[in-house]
Length: 289
Image 1 (cartoon, rainbow, N blue to C red):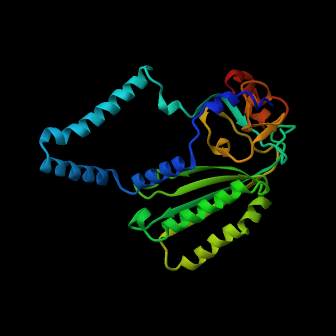
Image 2 (image 1 turned 90 degrees about the vertical axis):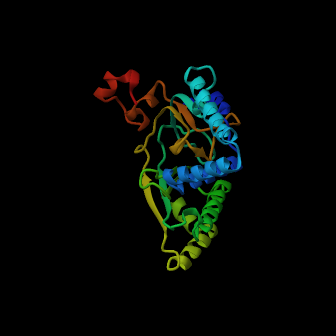
Image 3 (image 1 turned 180 degrees about the vertical axis):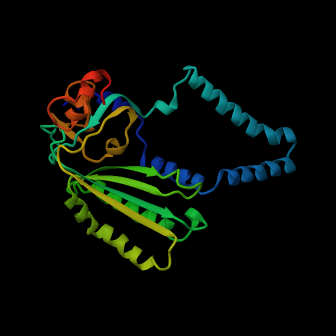
């Protein structure tokens, strides 16, 4: 398996610092806390205050110039005159994630070990949204748990990706974190770890006083040769997201992303470690996924 193929591309992808990630998450949450009509109304009030205390030209100019800048920049990207920032984190090509061995060495076969997944969900139904009671506490407990998983090399934790359920309602949508572990036993061990126990105890104390807070989880335990993944011109998300454990080749660490443009990894059956090809895969091999 060729884990070195995409390394140069991955190295060029901008690496966000923890503070930058936290800032993006915070402002996306703030944006999700109010409807579009509320944002427009707040903007209208601010614009009205500018008109009240400044000349109309000076009041309108900032917003007009900002929109002109955004429009011009977008069109320059569209025409290819400047770099399209939406493509900065896209990994061009066809790739798949394979789980390294516990010692970091490359796997000897595709999907040669099982994988366990826990999907954690939280939603705040308070009228004040993120400003409601308990919202900050949940965030801090969750942050501590994820940090503990990343720091503990023996936890069996492989990585996680984070999502917002943006199509459920107009505001205060839920969050979903998809965590990948080597085994379901690793998940159970984490569930009874001190850092999770602390959050668990806090939750048990506030369930009666904070009925507006919602949490959930789903767990899936997949045996070896029963899972696969493929990404084509896609950013690093899902199992390819914030991978906590690299693959080590000749002393060099690589993200466990293998080239799937050709060979067994280029087909569904190949990524499952099953011999042969299906009829459809033979017919459409050039574009098989």
